[in-house]
Image 1 (cartoon, rainbow, N blue to C red):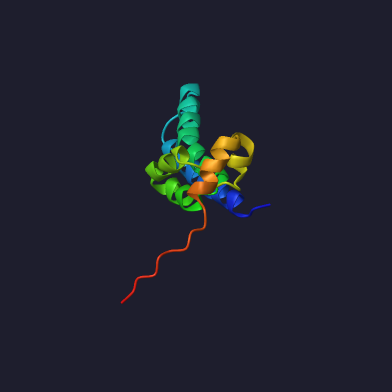
Image 2 (image 1 turned 45 degrees about the horizontal axis):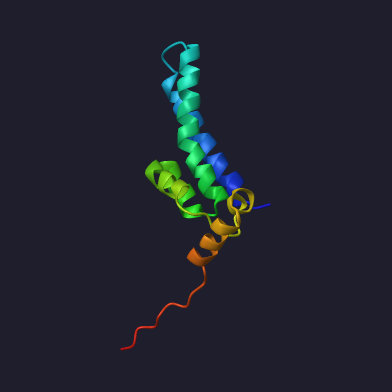
Length: 111
């Protein structure tokens, strides 16, 4: 099992728990507050988890702090050997991903 996914999830859960604890110190919690917290956690952690499943670890980790990055990674194409690609991509999309992430040699600049 890949170790990075549990680490990303643990960091996200710790940040979410701290936010919940800080927001509930001074007042009673209503059922609507639980709904808001649940929606915020899903919208905040969901794209980061999807990025991790797509094999885009930089987007997943940076997205925990600046969550625009997680949304960008969420909408971009997954790496061809990722869990996301194996589960959700058909032959056409896997071909696109393989072409996109093909190991092409970088040109060497001549002096």
